[in-house]
Picture 1 (cartoon, rainbow, N blue to C red):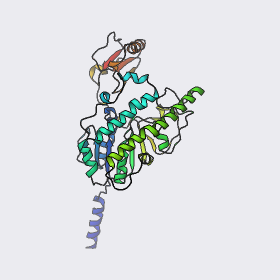
Picture 2 (cartoon, one colour):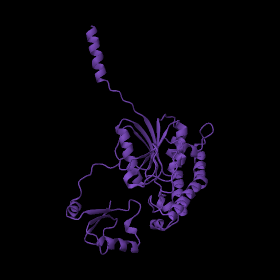
Picture 3 (tube, one colour):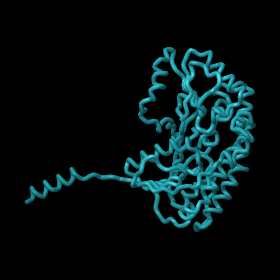
Picture 4 (cartoon, one colour):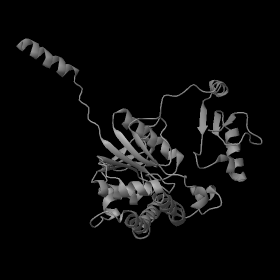
Length: 349
């Protein structure tokens, strides 16, 4: 009898699987499709590992999953029409740092965040949800007022920096940026700057910190008070909450960035969304197979359309491509370009 009991215990122990899952709340208010590619990969991996995820987002998850609850931000905010205060996105290459921040990024963040807060399903969730969450996962991209969710649920926060490292992130994680050799992300400098470049880099970095502290963050604070004012007790400052973020996952890759100090909370995870490649279309495969001197892929991303490029810039690029031995695959939105060189193939996404 005793042997049978011990055998039963052994079989039970060998067949017992211990799993430990977390309940995660994701919030991704910015409606950037390219941003979502990285976020989608992270969410799918969390779900595949057995975690439960509830997510406030603009786009559907690429795969259906029984442990995924979606709170959709709809309609998607058309930020190019509503927020961007330039006639063409190509103007952003020539505007001042002040306009880049105030007229573009700050207004973009404030308006897309406010749009998310005003969706009825989002408002209902924020006011009535009584769930328990073990972690808040948020995008590190101009939606700071949503960090008040950490106070509501008494949960730690991990953010996803879909744009990689930005100067303001260092101080938030307890790291001082050395402006003498860490270039501001809006400047075309490397870590080997001249004296005057270091002066300008330092002035630009200091100006952004002041502008962020005294212009931008008070507006995010006001938004948080408006939409989380129903919570009991005094609300913490959003500026304090962002300094309590546990870790930032940065969409950057160390060999491709400038030399800078690191702290454990700033984690570079660039490329985590890359999957096993699918077979190429036949014409593209042949074009690359016949590229005996190599090939170059040229893309300006999702939001910057090559087809809208000013004629002088387009002409300059075509001249350079025509002079190259390599073949060029160009992500281009229209079906044709006048006088396209023979070593260039255009393809849309």
